[in-house]
Figure 1 (cartoon, rainbow, N blue to C red):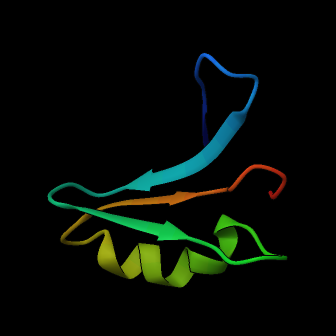
Figure 2: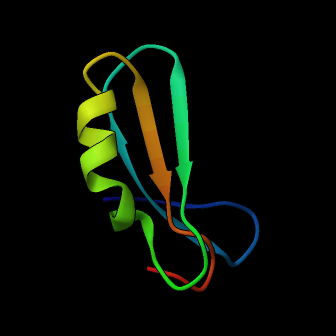
Amino acid sequence: MAQYKGKSTIQWNYDHLGEGETLLFIHGWGVDRRIWRQQTKYFSKKWNVLSVDLPGHG
């Protein structure tokens, strides 16, 4: 897990796998980025995959 904190007070947690063109996975309400674990593992073989926790989740 990596973290990014920009100019605001919001801290973003995310996972980054693979290389190539980017695929972004964004979860729905009531879950976090871990919902995408199987998909990110599979797609990271050919893609640069990011899965993020939206503010207030994860």
